[in-house]
Length: 142
Image (cartoon, one colour):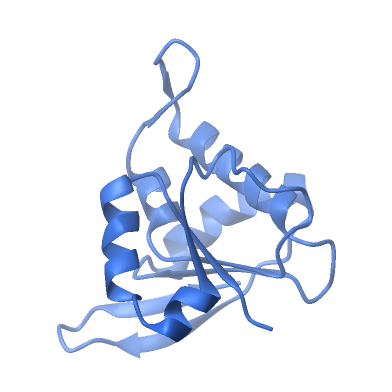
C-alpha cells in the first residue's frame, strides 16, 4: 500500500499541500509534516524511496544555518548533512532510492554528488527528462 510522507520546514507550505490534497484519497495516502530535513523524526531504514524536488538545489545554492549558535555552515556541510540524513532514513536495499528532480545540468550536479556519495557508498546515475515549454531541461538523478 502506498503511503506518502511530505516534509517541508515551512508550515505555510505544508498547509498549502494539505489544502490541495484535501480529497479522500489524498488524505488517506498522504501525511504532511513540518520538519528539518537534516534531522528527520523517523526511525532509520524507514523509507523505500525519497523524492526531492528543490531541497538539494536549495542546500547547494545557499548557506545553511547550523542549529548550534546560528552559525552558517558551508554549502558542502549542508549537502553532506542532507546526504547523511537521507542515507539514514532509506532502507538498506538495492531497491531503495533517492530521486532528485532538477534543472541542474549533469556537469554541475554530478561533481557535487560524487564528492559526498563516495563517503556514503552511493551509486549515482541520471537521465534527461527533456525541456519544458520555456526551454529549461530537467533531469532526474538517482
